[in-house]
Image (cartoon, rainbow, N blue to C red; front, top):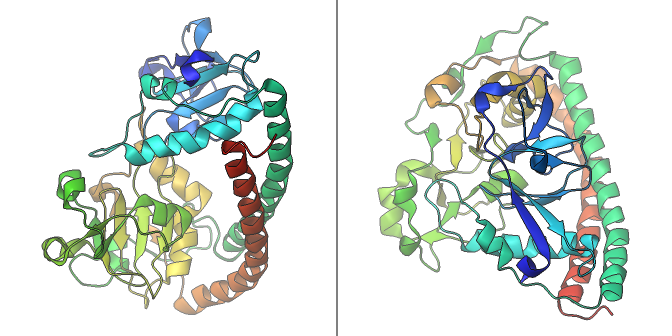
Length: 385
């Protein structure tokens, strides 16, 4: 068990009334910052030295998705529900641990039941078992995986550049959607959706989708995974026809938009494809059915994810712990700029040209990801020596 050769430090419950975003005091790493290289939150108060993070420290988010990441930001404080893992380098190579641990954390996450948010304990982390070959072998495995990971990261960086290009195109054509310098008319979400019941719908309460109701085949339960990854091939949970009819108000239709409503990936969204399986959203999603005569799906996607729009309308609702979607009453008041459909279509045509180039980079990423996962699997099986 890794508890025998790592030290786990749980974050401290710093007083949230001393948090600020003006840069006063020390940066503080909260759950939403795990996997990022910076934090937008600062703590203007006294703190114990035991909870100070340094560059290269390993962090795990204890709520939501149990992710391991390497902190690459400045010196910062470790907030509650984030833990730091300190390996004993005489027993385990830190890079080896960085590659071996995520798979086991994901296994725990998948097996963890929840009503609203999954919770991870230090005890569960300590009980994780991973292969522990001689230190020299660990170093060799880590070096091989480092090289494979470099290729993955280069492809990811290229995709990020294409994403930045489309965001730049959006600003060139439409301006900042918050300050609206081009003077477009605005509409709220209720004015943009089709005039049907359920066109704006949060997922059912967690109690409506207990694991004992799931069946081996039937109507798909759409999860955050689908919105986060824009991947509709994954099918893990199903309900039968009787349950589907009971929850039909949460049904997903082709070309609906699904939005992640909690966790560090709050606000990630995807457009449901035409060949999507019949099913319903779970409690962590929001479903939107736009009136395409008023706003195109692709335009909404770029509008919704535009940086200043997100920071203006979502940051205040992220809370001290797990970020959550704002109350529906607030969301329904958000103003969306609404340029003419012809202009939205011109934007879509230009985006399509960029997306064709991005698709090539994504194909390369898939290949590099497959190679990396193959090497990782071999390492778990002890086939790299």
